[in-house]
Image (cartoon, rainbow, N blue to C red; front, side, top):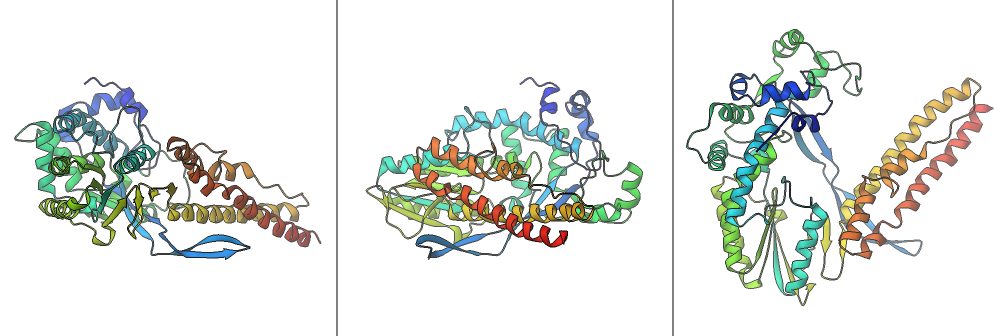
Length: 448
């Protein structure tokens, strides 16, 4: 496996941490030298929490003669994210890359290369749309089947360190970890971290600003005096859990499940079923008579990995003559399928609509502040910059929820998805026009 400085150049990102971004040439010389890694001192991870609003469908209501989904907000999902310094991130990415060839070879040998879907570079670069389509096509082909949907609880936080080490050795085909690999293993299991808000507070920096004038958060001396000496560094002391967000964590989660993937796939295959795993989401398609024995097998193997299944998310969806007959929807990777049509999940659409309203509101608040100042100086108010909103939330943009939905409709050949997103263009305009009308009245008041 050949590698050069372009590997590091392609993954260069500019963000603030305790170190400077380094040139790809320097990175190549340093990171590819095992002796350097053996002596490397890893910085603490930067910790923050990512909150996503959970939304649940709660029936329908009729508004102006049209059927409208009623959604209710649930408790927000909090996901702890930890990101490494520049050089540490490159080290993790390089070692994940080094081991990926052996891992891919093992998947091929065990016949599970089509079952493990997440965190891999696959031929033709398939994404969640393709993965979901394959599942729905398989159900359509079988007509009569059961679909087991199983979710692992707190996946990254529960990965046992000794089992990670065993999986690591298995991928390398060794009995003992080389010193450089052991250094990486210790840094990702016995890691330290700092809360982002505490760091910025101790360095007298505003957490809400970009600080584009800075290339690193602080000097080495400031790190010792204001970070280490103020004792805001926390050491992870548990014998389980790896940071979610590092460049190697996704790879380690896959190798951790290697024996599980092999064993479950073999059992499912013997029963002429299909097995898929996307990170912590497990899906099995099988004959109805095999669904409960297979569920028990999954529960048994998961327990051996010192993991736990999230019971409230475990579902068995039944299909007869190609149509869903069970109460529970089949939800997979952001889509639902009932045997007739594929749709985007209602919660995904509701989250998108909520985000549109929030951004338009914030955009308007910013516009009002600027125009109030302009009117007080005798200048005309500025027009709203609509292109920004359109690029983020409509078909005009290339990387947003609507453009993703349009790609899904095309790949899955599903016109129902287009129908789902059809009203959203009008809704964007409705929100904008509502604020524009209110703004014009406010501007007239200011000019009096």
